[in-house]
Amino acid sequence: MDTEEQEQPAEITLTTCPGTTPCTPLSKNQLKKQRKLAEMVEMRKLRRQKEREKRKEKKAQAKALGLPSSVGPSRKELKRRQVTVSSQNAEDSVNVAIDLNYDDLMQERDIAKCVKQCLRIYTINRRSEQPLHLHFTGIKRDGHIHESFKKNDGWENWNVQYHFDRTHTEIFQKQKVTYLTCESDTVLEKPQPGHTYVIGGLVDHNHFKGLCHQRATTDGLSTARLPLSEHVDMKTRSVLSTFHVFELLTRVAAGQDWTEAILETIPQRKGAKAKDSKETKTLKEQPESSEEQEQQGDNVKDQAMPES
Image 1 (tube, rainbow, N blue to C red):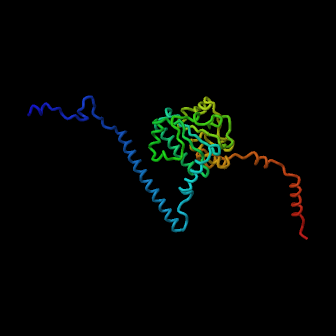
Image 2 (cartoon, rainbow, N blue to C red):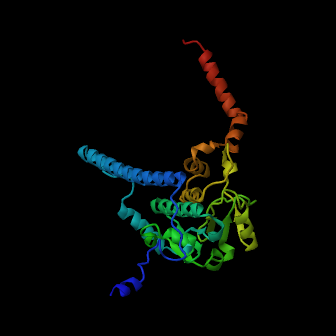
């Protein structure tokens, strides 16, 4: 009986398993990063809780004063707008496609930023008075961007048309597609109904400068740039984030002036200032007409005449 017990193999654990090496303790730097991450997660929860409490207080104060508890459109109104846009014919509305066919060119943190911008684009479109037909194209199924989308609860229910393993060149007519790039020589006057405007969903920190323009010209697509330099002066470069470009399109498509839309959209750090229009300058420089001169002369005479 004792010999049988001795012959039984010892219990195999992770430390006694052949071919494994014991875990090395974490370095001070790794432990510091773990602590910072845990603190950040905890602080985020506290911020969200404070935000909820502030919203409740504001609603209670508004209710006590007999004021409306919410500012802006209700969820029902936002849903109605989306249903209206979805029921419209593609020829009667402006289509915007976010080109996400850059899965293999971005690092993990840049992919997360790209998907976050897509979330902001969806929010901007949802709250717009005249939402656009929004498409996310070129998503590689089970790729990095797809996996990042899955981290957002309810992303499948967004009012967006997802196109997996299909790019904008396979979905839309090339004659009605314009790729927006800052390297283009053509200036976009105004988004046209029935046309599709493609925005590159590439977060690369200028590592692949001009890649979107190169791909568009290779595919035989027309390109255009936003008229930023024609309407405003900026201290920094006129390169905008994907969601800023989309927001400008929604504002101008809804009838807003380019200058006003740019000043209300781009960050203040870019130091944008409106340019004086040529019409205003022309009016200032034009000499007064003969009738106006005569009228001014009469006014001067009347002022110089003594009272009777």
